[in-house]
Amino acid sequence: MTKEEDLDDQEAQRKQFYLETADMRKGWYPVFPVGEISSKKPTAFHLLGDPIVLYRDPVTLEAVALADICAHRSAPLSTGAILEGKLECKYHGWQYDTEGTVVKVPSLMDGRKIPANAKARSYPLVESDGYIWLWPGNPEDINSAPTPNFHHLYPQLDFPPRLEYFDLDIDASLLLENFLDPSHLPFTHTGTIGKRADATPMRMAMNFTRDQVSGIPDTPHAPHLPFTEFIFFPPSSIGLKIFTKEKNSYGEQGFYVIPTTKGHCRFVILQRFTFFHTFSQIPIFSWVMDRIISRMNYKILMEDYEMLKGQQRRLLHGANAMKSPVAADTLIKAYRNWWRVAIKKKPWFSGYDSDIEDIVLDDYRGSC
Image 1 (cartoon, rainbow, N blue to C red):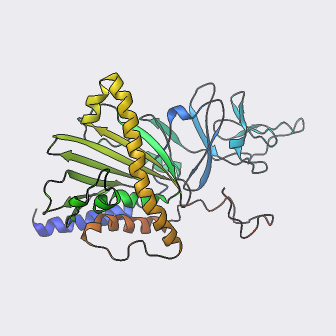
Image 2: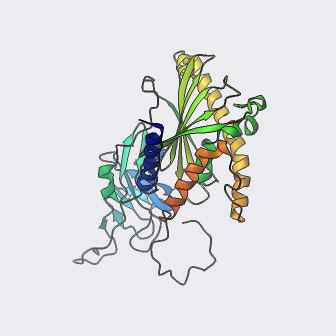
Image 3: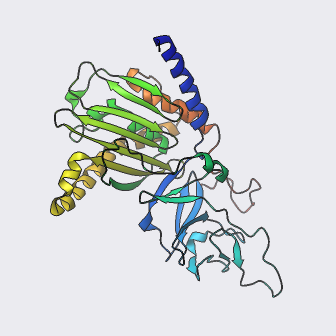
């Protein structure tokens, strides 16, 4: 393939990428470790602003996800209980089956039928790789989507990854951008994973495919830096392939950023490194290393968090998310362009009905 043909192919792939992937509701999101959802009590969650309740069927132990709103008086089902295998609303005792259909109304007169529209939306979910994954979009689109799982960037790493999550008061888009930005490491993370001495001129070698975009930092003045490939997998995850020449070690990190509500997100981090695995073979070291790594992850995350909280406050006052880009920002710019296309599709929860009751104040800003 000639250079001109290669450029034409990349342009075609770029257009296809934006055309086919920029739908934030058309994707699987890992929301909870499987062990955190039980048959004892329901759990509330938000995904793209949608209020959702999760629980397990006490009989089959299968996980269930329904819209967190009772079909009767719009009370939150997540405040209710699981009785006789059914999710019961705390307000008037209406009970729902796992499909979201009301099957019992205690106050219903004998001989009367339960209203046909007495239902709560059911959200598709899958249990995979130790997590519960939710699909917030049209269920019919699932047929064209692969089974959800955490990305394995190095297939030869056949041991389980470390997984943990954090809930953050920053928008998912800001955190995703942050993970596509290697040039901030020497400054924001000085003393943890960065050194000011490693600050260097940088540009990104970009590559588009139909379903992802990746970038490899080109640092001609700092060839000693680890090889790292940054990959954005729409709609909400980033993978890092890392290889360190000096230590002859390699591994991967996965950053799954779940947009819960506007300005808030759940961050799931996956880590799989050869040196982690070596230490994990020794029981006492495994316990110690896990806690050290968890503390280090939190410390690094808080370094980003301080910057991103300040950035978010300025954006709320009308600042520009990317005012003066440079060559090192090319991958961030590609994500920001994707986000602009995705946000035009209005992915966020907009309410159950446009006909709002007059008991709700116009300037009310409570959570759903």
